[in-house]
Image (tube, helix red, strand yellow):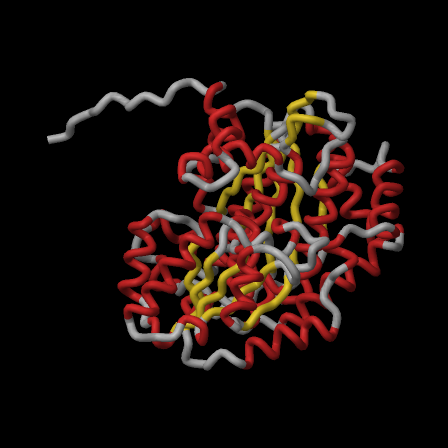
Length: 434
């Protein structure tokens, strides 16, 4: 995988190189607990217990679903229809899902590191009821991926005898795609998880050399240089199969860097806002803003070399109108690449900060390496901002209010305290449409 930085930026990055080497020598959980042979064999053994004709229903939210979706969309799009993901609690979506699924031939993966995620456990209870209504045994159709020792889901799994896989306690949810959280769903849709993890391990080994780490450091150096004036980072994927990678990256980047307090407890309100875009589609929606709007964004362009099964346009078709003659003998890939390069050139000409990551192939080794690179980049960016990349205190306030309103024991006073500082919620004006 090659990474190109435009413009070239090779100065002022010695501290970033040092931070990278410190990170590799004292690795956080997503590096230190990368699955080994035994863990991969365990995941494969659980997968073997699932009938091949079963559909997979994944219950999870945030880091418990985004990584799996990204892996499947990128690597096995033709088998993605085997996997249904419920990552929200809109009752309309759940109802329509239950209408379309054949529960008798459905295996349910419920994923929650803490084991107490309200949205996921609520979904689980609804699914259990639905299975029972159909005369099915939920205990035979549910697999739980959760903390190895504690939490409501772990206790429930052990009480009911469910099949389980652990989430390493040292790995936070948004960094867990290369654990059972992302690997089991990916395996069930055809991804070679051993090659995926091997790609991540290989890039870790290569990063220990100055030359291999240079591309990552160069990108981070450029990001840091422009961050104060350009706090928005646009993840611009030029392959449809890579768009969902942006959704995964958006959570990783936003939740890790957006913090009210720095590491010393000072109130700083720091962060970097991710924005997901799709090429070439968003050339016809957002690129106008990107090129001529505020110069407050940096751009990360993702692309991959893929074999094309479509040939070139025939000369006969191009002769239908003289304005179409230029397309004769050209392929859609020719047009796609030309439009990508045109967008990069237009952004650069407008003084925008642009990086391009080009995958030599969109396969497991490259994607495993890319996931590891982005997780490492996020931690190094957090080091620059002097914030904790592994917590998410801003999420807790809304959770406290929700738990208080739902009557969860122990949350009433905390929820009421937060609501007391909020503007009273009033009904919005009603606009009647006849």
